[in-house]
Amino acid sequence: GAVVSQHPSWVICKSGTSVKIECRSLDFQATTMFWYRQFPKQSLMLMATSNEGSKATYEQGVEKDKFLINHASLTLSTLTVTSAHPEDSSFYICSAPRLAGTQYFGPGTRLLVL
Amino acid sequence: GNSVTQMEGPVTLSEEAFLTINCTYTATGYPSLFWYVQYPGEGLQLLLKATKADDKGSNKGFEATYRKETTSFHLEKGSVQVSDSAVYFCALSDNYGQNFVFGPGTRLSVLP
Image 1: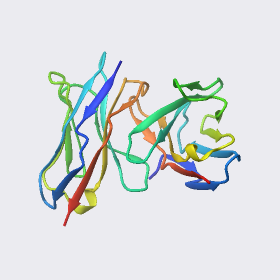
Image 2: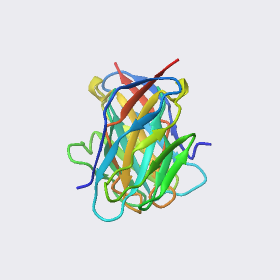
Image 3: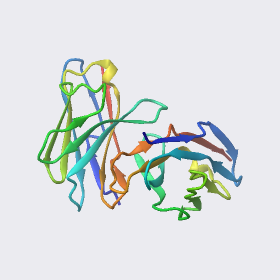
Image 4: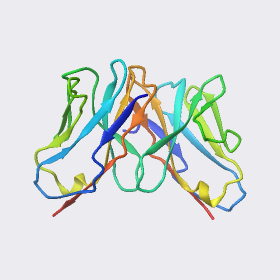
């Protein structure tokens, strides 16, 4: 069964609104989680590393004020897309390491901004 | 830095054909190697992994062997099915699950 969940699985919102995506590790604790973005027919791009108890670290070119990350507990990280625009429409995927060297991925959240 | 290269496809095969998707990597140290599969509209699922040289990962009829001498981790399956149609990603990480790097993905279509 799934070891990492995401909610919602898909969301449609109006331009200018904010959207929160949750990532939960099930039955295990994750001090670190990762957020990826995937454009159609492309590979995953790491956006940021979510760290429990400290600030997230963002990859080059990712706006930290646009994509707010909060690692609220050892099993929950949230990604908030603030003032969303159509170009933010994408598939957002989180992951968490469980066993050494293995990432478990959430099912993804498809965001469509109108 | 670390990198992963894989054949980009798309790859189209008939059912029961033999599949090979090539993957090579560049990394420092001793990375772990993975194949992930993404079915249409879904997230990534771990297909198989290998954590050290000469290890063979296998699952659902798929196999890949960690070849340090050729820095490769080619994915193979002897007889593909229509249900194997998906995008396959080769990836590596260090032993702590950090510095995770994906290949560009290979789209596989299996025709009945």
